Image 1 (cartoon, one colour):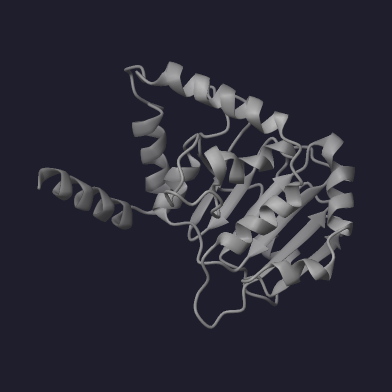
Image 2 (image 1 turned 90 degrees about the horizontal axis):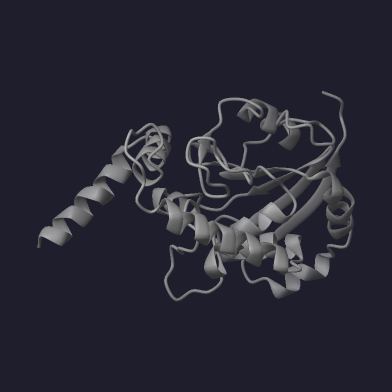
Amino acid sequence: LNALLLFLLSERRLVMATPREHIEEIRRKKFYIGREEENPLTEDLHQAVKNLSAELYAKDVHFLMELIQNAEDNDYMEGLEPSLEFVITSRDITATGASATLLVFNNERGFSPKNIESICSVGRSTKKGNRKRGYIGEKGIGFKSVFLITARPYIFSNGYQIRFNEEPCSNCNLGYIIPEWVDENPTLSVIKQIYGSGNTLPITTIVLPLKHDKVNPVKQQLSSIHPEVLLFLSKIKQLSVREDNEDP
């Protein structure tokens, strides 16, 4: 009974916290950022992140198909036509020095607090027993395969505005899984401008400033996406790719 009460209280707390408060809580409670005592799990986390990194780079991932698969596995509101749009821009909207940035727009239900906690873990899925699920797939490789082409992925979804960094965090010396809140670079208004100011932004936008050596491979993968891919997808009904090269 006590365990059940604790579970219900933690679920209620997650629902009541604002997205920003939730991220601050993850940083403080899970990664001990801003606390005086040391995290007893630091060494284990270090090893797990190291293994994840090695596994990532050992894979020759067809990166865009991974993102399409993630979108296919996501949940959608009833009566809504599931859509996925890739936009590549030459604007350095993240101020990271990237010569090209890939934006992924998806009108799925969006990240829940549980999904966010899952993505801040090395290998925890929000759906047990489901090997390929949106947000995070096999052993946490799903979403984290974005690190093959970006050092800093950004997620804007359901009020969450966060980024992750391949480089170890200065506070706890871990990369990949430490969420940072994003107030600017980019702002939602800049993202909306690229999406098309007349349109409402889909619930989830992923922003990927591309590593310099990945710009051409990503452009090649984008140009090789054929409409026929929709035949193999049961949920996604609209899939589009476009370029945005307007100067800032």
